[in-house]
Length: 298
Image 1: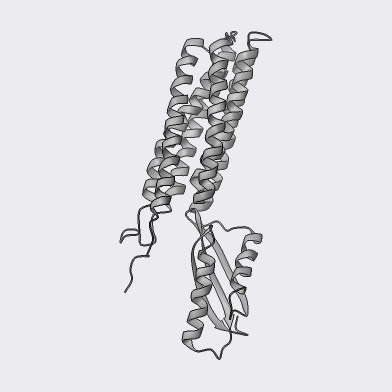
Image 2: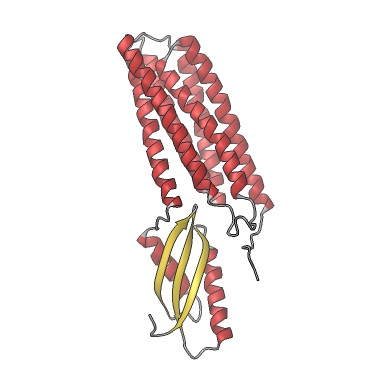
């Protein structure tokens, strides 16, 4: 009797994940330390807010490394369906880290507004923010490409976070740069905008990962695509039931198909195997359970 789901471990896939983890971790540590040092020297609240965001990215990077490592482990008796459900758990931890960073950024900005804003020398703070935006833009394109190759929701979230960081660095750049030319209040205001952006991304990450953990369904369009794929298999005459839900970051399908009732058990079983193979070859599908019935049954 088979107790553990068979899984194939692709060495090339693991190598690609490793590249994504190294780039994400190294890039975020470099940016967080650089921004924190310059924020301390310059006193820029906008840069402090962006540094808080980058520090949360460092925590997120470590959690991502751990989560991706665990999620790639083969199925065993403790987790007979595999370990992929660890990915959205890491996503929730990332959400908490982002929320804390947003709180710290907003708190610092409000305290600066209350105490009285000061103008910021635009030299070093604006330079590090431009460097940050450039680095994050490069990370966005690189990680997004790897996410497409691996079809990884964690890496997709990481690439989106990198793109949002380009925007937050841009807001901080404008705030710090314009505080000495227009009004000092623009620096803490930029800090508040950065905090708001962090909270927005945290909410979206929370919603997405809760869906993965609570068995959320997929779109009607994707369900129709699954039915279309099943009906394209020779011998399938109809599909009259489909339930698609997320179990971790991928979908599990429960489908009922209709075949000719005069077929032998071996022939019906062969059709089911082909349907399972076709559905599980799709990037968003982890497992497909197929129930076969004669034509006319529902």
